[in-house]
Amino acid sequence: MSTPSSDDQRAHEIAKLMRRDARALIRRAHDGDQHTRYKLNLQAFSLLRAARRLSPDPAADVEMETLSADLAAAEEAIARQDTEAETAIDDALTEATEEIAALRERAEQAEADLARRDDAAAEALAGQTRIRELSVKDSGINLDLIPPHEIALLWVHAARGMLGDAPNYSETPVEWPREAMSMEVKAAGEYESFVLTVQRKGKITPHEARQAAEAERDQLSAQLDRVHEVCDRGEWGAVRWADPLPVPEWVDRVRAAIDGELNFHPWPAFDRWRNERRALLDPQEAAQTPKDTQ
Image (cartoon, rainbow, N blue to C red; front, side, top):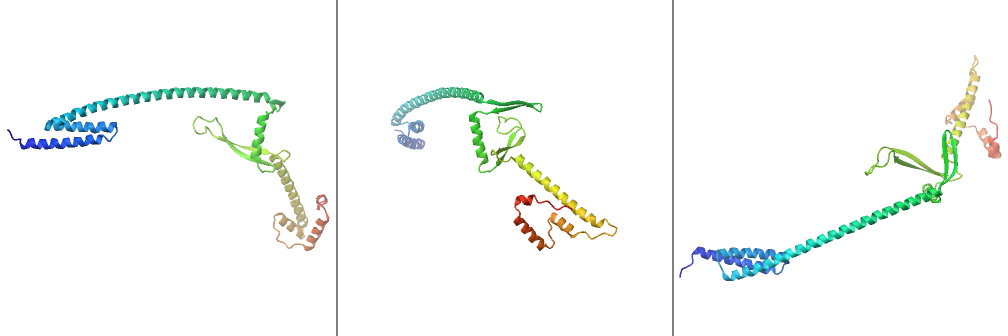
């Protein structure tokens, strides 16, 4: 009977350790899912096959055959699951594609319905529009239209919102691009500025208010010019002689009053007389009192 060499004993010990690790992997595989079991059993099969090359063991060969059958069954199950998953994915994609096509068709139908409704609404509004006046003026045609009731209501609602608590009118600055809006998220071209003015009926318009202010300014300016002329005449009447006379004291007083410089001593008697006169005269009589002339 031959005695095994030290190399054979070492190979036997290594094979024994490999089989032990393989069995540990097989035990761990029982607690995992299908893919985990397949992975661990495949590693165990590789260890058992390597151990058989080092040191054959009939019992280990039986384990390898059993493990090989389990691996083949697992591969078939995994392949079947992959096929079923691919089929399910294909079916889901087909169903989603059909649903998307149906949604697109419904969206196009809804868009067509909205377009028809818009056309019908536009025709209805156009049918409600009436011509109030058509005239030719300044080499141009002036067309005055009566808007439809719905548009008039929108204008009234917008006017109320823009006026708010304003007693007379409101002005709202508006900017709009010179050219049409492009398809990108930006405005094409430069902006033009407008002011939308909404005025309450029966109130003075901004243009009329400006005209009144300008008229009052022109009147006050003409009155100041006449006062300056009176002062100049008073001064000229004193200094025109070869031996000039003293310039009347009131000339400097009036000029200082026009310039807003009341740096002279007041006249108490005059102030009392003016206050008494104003108390006696009502505003209408005071407005009709003739002004002093030079």
